[in-house]
Every structure is written in structure tokens, then in C-alpha cells.
Image (cartoon, helix red, strand yellow):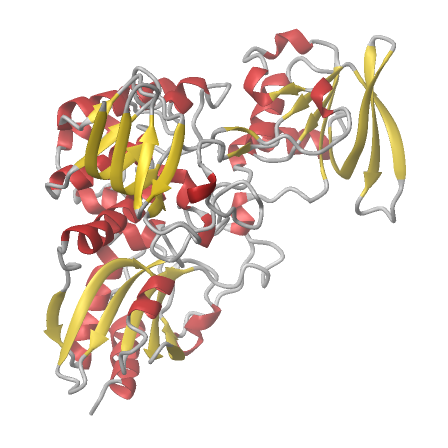
Length: 512
């Protein structure tokens, strides 16, 4: 049996469901294929210890749903107040089962066209269209969007790594490691999550990888190690036998009843050692499954090899018509903004849906016009940065774009475009303004809890915390930018500190 659609989405996790919702709301011809019997299969298995690291800040003091979304990291965007994730859990770090329940309701309430128990076996491209094989059926589509999430564990090329127990099989109860010496290969959140469960039981826990631990509070990236796992680091510095090792694991082997690991320290002039353990665990993250793509449409990987390389419009870098959704769309803001997480990619997908409808259905990308005077633009820009949850969550990545017409009378305003996409799309324009929220330089402050501030508008470019930045582009070239002072409550509306400096900057760069 053959089916024919304009759009075909593979995967009904949060990314696939979010895009399905936007395409359905647009009246698009789409279908979503899911190999399992219900949505959110990844979250039925992970995280292993069932506690999400995505925030669920229920009490914000804000009544505006758009602003509430800045701290609701699990809700998908929709028009139904009953489908806000805080209605499913009051916990700050919610249980993964609550997210699974939420995703099932999201699909059911919106009546999204998802075909469950339909595993995709192969994707081919024939004559400019895609053929998606699911066993006895073939789905043909102009556009394929892959929202399959992680396909499986990333297994580093360490001799003997097959002796380790993978994160996917680590027992949720740490009691099985009572009194044991445990080596955990990896230093990301899955490694620290696992170590946290072992802390009351194991006699020794070593976390090993070549690079130092990256903490979220220093990097500003939510995918780095979160403060909720700080107990292991405390134990390290309090000399309780647990340790974090900067080293390469050169080889692992069995000896007698245990394991031995040969390591080379990366910050100790090449010092080497052989260490003894009772158990070895592999917690080294995940990778996408590229095995379902035929040679006719095999996507190039990003430099780390685990995710696809994409263009600024979320399209495969080398396969026309093949797009990626959900956590697979993080290559262009890798370890910076939040495209790896629901709270980030939900906004990417709203934009992607608009770009797809423009390309395949001829629906113009939505924009609005406003006067191009410095006063009107100042009010509009400050209104957006004070209200938008997309700019807040996708800092330094998504931007609002203001295209100024040749006469300097009218500005066309586009919301929530990747900044590099906006610059490319409007490269022929004489004047483009982009508005983002940005952090200050990450390497300027050795102690992120003791930052000296200079709260004067002329030194706003030295701000360490999240703050608005307006950039001026002329025919694709960056010619000027203005930073606005940070604010403790994220309210950039002070007449002297924010409005006046921005108005002056815009007056300087807008046509007379």
C-alpha cells in the first residue's frame, strides 16, 4: 500500500508532536509515524533514575502565560490552558513518567495524525521526492522531517569498553554496588545522575573523561552538569575517596574477579596509572541513528559525529527537503542555547513550521509593519525582550528581525528567526536590525558568584548576565551593535538605563 503526503514526520516524541501540532493548525497535509504504541518512548526509559533535569517552576508570580513559559521547560506550545505541564506535576525537577503522560494527552487532545506501531525501516529519495518504507507500506512525501531523537548510546572507541555496563542498563537502585569500587566513564549529566544514586553505597566512585567538568552555572548551557548533582563534587573535595579524573581511559580488561583500567592523566604531564575496580559503567551520552537512510539521502553529520549537520533553516546540510526536529536540530547552537531541550526546540519548531509552509504551500512568512522611527522601534524592541519567552530561552540563537525599507519609513518585523538565517535571508537589504538576548563573555569572570558590575549604560557590553543586544547589518555585514544593561528582574524598561540608550543608538543608524 502506498500513501502520499506533503510532509512526513518520523517520530512522536515531544519534537514530532510539537511540529505535528503546528502543521495541523496550519491545515497542512502531514502524517507522523511512530514505531512504538504511544508517544515519548525515550522518556519511558530515560533518564534511568527517572528525575528530569528540565525545570518546572510552577510559582512565578506572573499571570501572563508567555512569561510563565520562560520557566516552564516541559510544556509544548499550544492554545489549551489544560495542557500546561505544571498541571501534571508540581515538582521542580519532575518525574519522567509525568512527561510521558503529558505527551500522550497532548496527542489525544489535539487529535494529531500519528500512526503508532509503524517503524520506519528505510528512507530513500527518488526523483526529488522521498519514499519512506515501513514494511508492507510505502509513504511518499515532498518533505521528510526526522524527529526520532537519540537512536542509541554513544560508545567511545576504548579497547575493552564492551565490558562496561551501559547507562541504558544501569540499575536504578544503587544498592547493588554496595562496598564496590566503581569507574564511571563519562562526566555529563547521565554520569553524575548515576554517581548520585551510588553515593550511599559504593566505597569508591571515579568519574573519568579527558576534559574537566563543565558546570551549567559557568557555561550557561543547560546541558552541562547541573547543580543538583553537586554532592559528588562535594565528596571529591572533602576527600571521601570519590574523585573526578581528567584522563583518557586507554584500556579496560578483566583480571581475577574485577576490572582494571589503564589511564593517562590529561592535566598531569602524561602521568599514567592502572586502577582496580569492581564495576565499570559507561555513561557517555547518545547518538542519532543514521542507519535508516539510504545512500540517496544520507545526511552529513555535524563535527562531533552524533547529530546531523543542518543549515540555518534546520534543513540537512546536504539533502534537500530533509529536515530535523527536536533534539536533532541543535547543531547550530551546540552547547549554547537550548535547542537540545523541549523549552528550546519548541520555538525552533514553530519557526520551522512557518518556513515549511512558506516553501511547500506558498504561505508567506508572517511579518508586520511598523513605523521605522527610533521612538517606535525602541518601544517595539523593549516590548519584545520584556515579553518573549522564545528570545529568553533561545538566547544568542533566535532573534527578532526588523527590515528597514529603502526610504527609511517602514520596518517589517519578523519574530523568532535563527539569527544566522535572518542575516542570510535579508543579506540584500540595506538595513537589518536583529534583536537577541545574550550573556556576557563566559571567560571573563573566574568566580561566577562574585562578579563585579558596572551599572552604567555606556558599559552595558560588559554585562555578565542575560541582557538585550541590538545589531545593525548592512547587506549581510555586521556594522554596529548596542548592549542594554542587565536587570535583576529581567525588566528592560527603565527610561534612562534602557529606553534612552537604545533610542539614541537607533537614531544614529536609521536613515535620517
